[in-house]
View 1 (tube, rainbow, N blue to C red):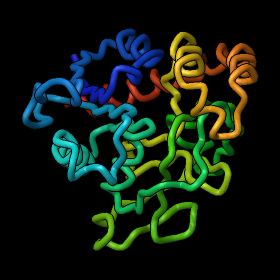
View 2 (cartoon, one colour):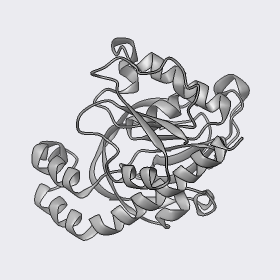
View 3 (cartoon, one colour):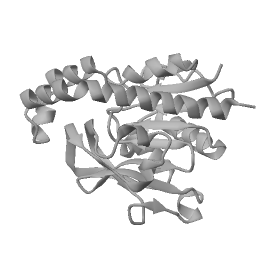
View 4 (cartoon, helix red, strand yellow):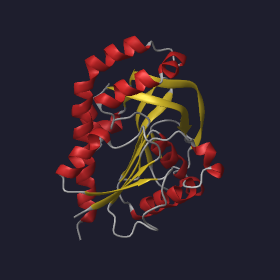
Length: 252
């Protein structure tokens, strides 16, 4: 049975709608709550995939965050092995950092529902193609990332990313929103895993965060009512696609 390591960093961020397609695909899920418990593994030996979820911490907090250097090493190992990786929100930012991106405050928080524009590369990508050309997605982040090159397909020099190719798969508001490193590692700033109860819970629990991003909580509840079912379908489809990558990696 293919085994994946899922790294959780706070109680608000978990697999949500990705858990179903992972289990349906026959994956074994080993979950580590990095902020609360010691790592259940000391390497990725025996694993066929890695998922890194959202966090209250940012990449710039690494020196004060005990679990982050080890997670960075796990991502580096996964990239070296071309093991499937899926980074979501913070997970995408840490993946981008490992792949040579500059990560920092965006100056424009994205909290709520936003439309993103998928790039030409996304249409042929095994994961991102399931999202369609301009999906509405749920965001909750204050950081962004960029590589020392123009958006698009980036061929970084070896001193920056070990020579790994980076493809930008989605943008919005002048910022990168999704990307792929090499063949098997994906990151999304948006929370494709998010389910309906968690969406509504975030709006009820953190209304000021939505307001500071320029979004009215009541309007976000209505946007959730309109968008949640299609969002769930896309989440499950992307989960199935990622599970297929894990199973392919697991084949002898």
